[in-house]
Length: 285
Image 1 (cartoon, rainbow, N blue to C red):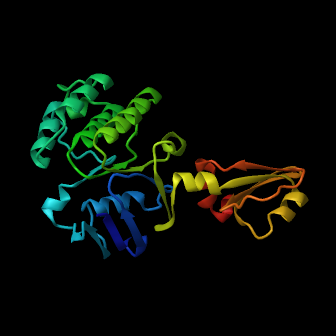
Image 2: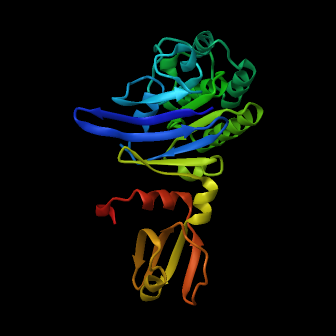
Image 3: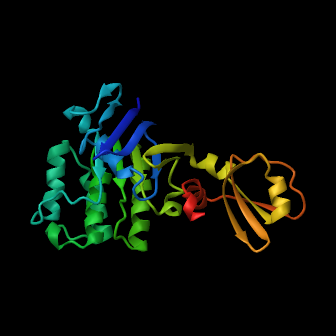
């Protein structure tokens, strides 16, 4: 059964941060959680993992209330920018502490990743760079025996080589032991080929939940001379527009295939552009 987020709301000092959030995270699925800075992504992940508490709504796992249920809480895991470990604790002690808390740990895969990332297990947490702190957290996330893993900006400080290594490790562990991963990231195109379904949050609300395939197939860019394009796109679901002299490009959501007149070109709308146009503010246009 799913991890069900039902009508979650959260505010801080009379400022609404989350509004009527409803999501069903299905088992063994790779999700991308997208949103601009301040959209409410981190707040939502912290609520799900009981680091903060919602004002309204409920969260259930397999039909049971997740909040303040220790057994169910051990089936979810969140890694984020927050550094929750004592500065003096060593890397190998962090891993052992995690095993003690969750009752299991994939030491074979963890040791493989320690070598691959060249992480010194004898170093203290305070001596790790920002990138290596992220690497340690990622190793833990990929090796804990839980069903739902939430990764909030997981590749902070990682160079391109280490990011690629993480993505390959994620695919490897998911292939061997499928479970649900929810990745919140701004590097949209880097994860586009990994993700099964994307959830887009804007202004504290879920504004879109679609499979990666649906987004790629339904989004389109219509380009050409202004008058010709604007006549062609009448009645379409327009989410954005760019202009260069007499030429324009309109970004279309849920585009339906049809005969295209001469002078107009249709191209796929990539995920990055889809997200940017869907969440663009009026003053940014």
